[in-house]
Structures are given as C-alpha cells and as structure tokens.
Image 1: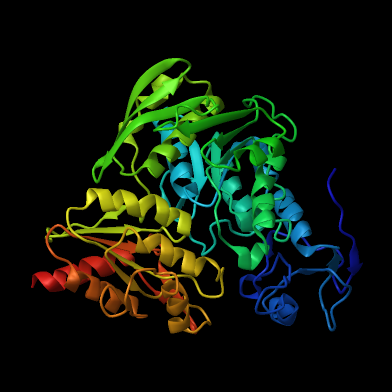
Image 2: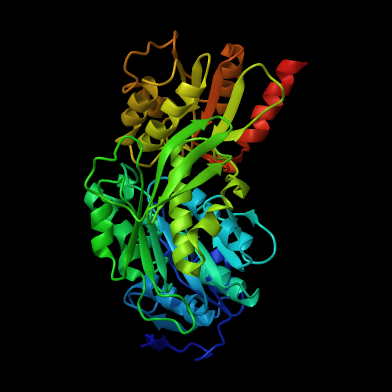
Length: 502
C-alpha cells in the first residue's frame, strides 16, 4: 500500500507539482521537494531557507513547520523512509519493471556486478548496472558520478528509471552495507529479485557500531529479495559463498531458494557441497585457469584476470546469470575468457619499466590477505606496497591492515588514502602499529603525500620487483581536511614512470 504524507502547511500554494526530489539545497529548483537530512557534520534543516530561495516548491519535514517557511510542508515521521518511498513513486516504481540483482559483501562487489553485467550483455540481454567504479543505464559505460557506491534513493530510482526508458531487462546493483541499513533507507523501496553474497570481514564499524550490526545490515538484501513475483520475470533467488564462515546467516535470511558456490582447492574433504565449485586453480599475473564442477561434470575455465578472488567473483556471476536467465551454465562458462576487469582493480601500469606496477582498490585486511600472498608468489623480486586508511572511518582495521601487509610485503610505504579531518600522520602511525617485523626507515616508511610516496616506491624498485598501489583504485579524488583534491592513481603512476624514463 502506498504511504501517504499529509501537507501540514499550505503556504501560498497548497498542492504544487513535484518533478524532482533534492536533499542538497544546492540542487533545489522550481518543482523540487527538498528533504533536509541529518548528517555526521551538519543538519540539513540549516539549509531550508537556501533551498526555498533556489525555488524549492515544498519541504518534507519530520517535526512540524520550520520557522519562516514560505512553501508547503509535508510531514513524515522518518525523512529518509519518506524520501525513498516518494522517489520510487516519482519515477513510477522502476524496479518493478526490471529483474533487479543486488550484490553485497565486504570485497568483490564491484567485480561481481561487472562480471554479471558482461555475461548478460554477451548473451544478448539488455543490462544496466551501478557499481562503485562505473554505471550504465543506456548504451555506454560511464564513471560512477557519485562519491558513494550506493547513492541516495532519488539517484537510485532515477538511474533505474533511465534503464527502463532504455529498454533494459536487468539491473545489477552493488548494494553496500550503508545503502542497505535501516538508518539510510537508500534501497528500501527497490524490489530485488536476486541477492548475491560474496564475503564479509572487518569494515565500516564507525557506521554500524558492531560486526553483528554490519552483518545484519548486509543481510537486509536477502530479507528484501523476492517480495512478490513480477509478471514475466524469472523466479527470485539468492546466491551465497560457502567459503565464507557466515554463509549460513545470509542463506537463512533469504525468503527465496539459495544457490551456493565455493573454491574446492585443498578442501574436498569438507562436508559442504556447492552447486558450483572451482578446483585446480592455477593463477599468475596474466590470469587464472581452473576446472568448474557443475552437476557432476567438469568444465574447463579461464579468465584473463589474476587471483583466486577473481575466480570466486566469476563463480558468483556464473551462478547468478544461470539462475536469472535459465541459460545452460556451460554456455555461460564459455564466455569466461571474454570477461574484462574493473578499472582500478588489479590494473597493470606498463610503460616498459623493469618492474611491475599494479593499481588496486583493496583497502580491507581481508582483501590484503587475498591479494598480497598471490602477488608475493608471482613476484621474482621484492613486493613493495603503498597504501593508507580512510580518515573518520573504521579505526580498528588500521593495525589489522598493517599486519596483513607485513607478512607478504618486503617494503611498506604508508600514505594518504582519504584522511578527511583526521591527522594524516596519526592514521599512518596506527597502521604502522600493526606492521610486525618492519622497521621505520629500513622497510617501513610513512610518507603522507601520496604522489611522493609513489615516487619513492618507484625509486626503490629494481628489476623483477612488483609495486602495488592499493586503496584508491578507480577513485577520482583524495579527500583532505579542506575537501576533495583531484586524483587519478593510474595517471599519477604513468606520469612518475615517465619522469624516470627521461
């Protein structure tokens, strides 16, 4: 049943036509409903006058009529819940017209979304997607225009509506724990048909408070999936990773049938049996070869992307696309060699230098534990890593990052990620506290300026070494105390390598 929100203040015009919803007063315009939200650093109610001055036609408010309001005021007990419901209604409930696939987890979300989208397109099916790195609502893939992986509800429903207008059949959405939280309601009115779980580890406790709440919020995707069958669409389902110790929590949260996948390397004696598994995985810097185990048969597989984690993401995508389309899994598996990686995810930078350089978005201890040992095994020389940790975010993970990196890397260079309002050196010292066996000035360096940190890493690198630039990946800025500063990790790496070649 549609929720109703009463007008409690008529002002001069009691029922204006609303054509957009704005939660940033700078985006307010004639025809917009302004929704002031409470944030970490400020209260949106401070900007009501500014929104009205810019032409906002109405205000949605939680606590009554704001002082001096000259436009109609709509009352809602929960502004975020109302914004979500009204956004869906404004765009004519676009998720009900698509088969919507949500992907959640700590690591691997963007790659899994991208793989699912590519499989669907390669099968000749019209797909749109939204991930941390990129999105597509029409013919072209573009950069994600938001700093958030899961944007606020007006943007979500607008993008879904664009997909409907462009005759997409499927929408694949990266669903973060923030987006799934009952505190933000960003995805509350999206009708999901499939839920995919990759893994879960220590992350974002500055927002969720406890690991248990973090896991609960992520599992909301499974609770939300399959709420009413859509005419002409496949049956809703879930997909979970049996290699995660928390797989059963997510499977039990689902009200739909659940399919499973796993890596079988060295674990054949386990009692668990997956619907799809990969065994005999062989990986180097050029890609991974493996055998798929499906319904008692073995299918050869190959992706041109290194690392077991990419094989895991490919398994999740294969199983999801099979269930969503009904296409035979071997038919989809034949497309594996055509999968391309996500920009900024294990992206090689090659200007014919004598050492390897890779850019990757890895920024959690679990991601380090997956990526760094693989890169250590594939590197003839030394492994040098440049990374940091986000300011005003989960502080407990910082020494965990240091510990995860210390064992695999020969040299660690700690630098800015997004320090925000925190002391830059203090963040690096908290990471360094976990860098066991490393000594500052010998194999551990703290260089806040990221450009100088990368320059220094390249100056140390010798033939056969590998330099990993971790944590920024595809991102276009570094958020400093005074706001975002333009940044392109790959471009900076190429610039500095070019300087060395001159």
